[in-house]
Length: 113
Length: 113
DNA sequence: GTAAGTAGTTACCGCCAGGTAACTAGACGA
DNA sequence: TCGTCTAGTTACCTGGCGGTAACTACTTAC
Image (cartoon, rainbow over all chains, first blue to last red; front, side, top):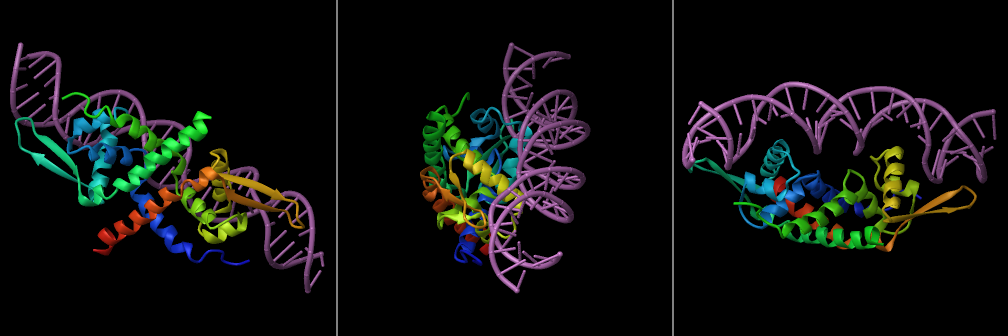
């Protein structure tokens, strides 16, 4: 028996691309937080209390580099910064839904039982 | 402004549960390989040539512990071992589809442009 | 007896994701 | 002038993910 599934090589690559962008402990939570609308640094931090400012800052930069979010600086009295999903970031919606659905399913099946 | 999205805490948790199981460089590729049917150690290895036997063995164990796959030993002439998806593993189908779809989309948008 | 194919295991090592703690810097209010 | 809000930055450290190489143990074929 030689190479088993030549077909799946392309499929594998696409899934890996997605995982690379999504990978890590904090990116998914950050994106989910932003699906509820534009938010400031501190607001995201309040949605995800156990992230450190260092990690939040670092992951926001990474997401911005991947064109999933935008960073907008407002010159208001105390300088505020607004983060928002780009269309590409919003296109994660379906994937996030499946992630949540399966997460619930998994918890019911394994942790629940 | 205080806590921003009390709703999203439950959603966040589910997505995190899913990510924890899926996380890492090799689990998704292994599961995808097994969606094409029951396979032996060497066959999976041929589908994913750049994984080392150590990592493959390690990740297969983790997937088995999470009840996503089963390991069956066959006492044939050369002992063979068959890995197969459990129903829970198969329930990843939709999530994997979204992962692939979005991976392609991302590649078109970012790498392509 | 030696090579090749089954399915792994073991030892060793490096890098970086992620955590903690402290610090920065400007503006506002008491 | 001290505390609090804004939004981060910097230094330091640890654990584990993942890589490489070598080795195990059994069977069949040459």
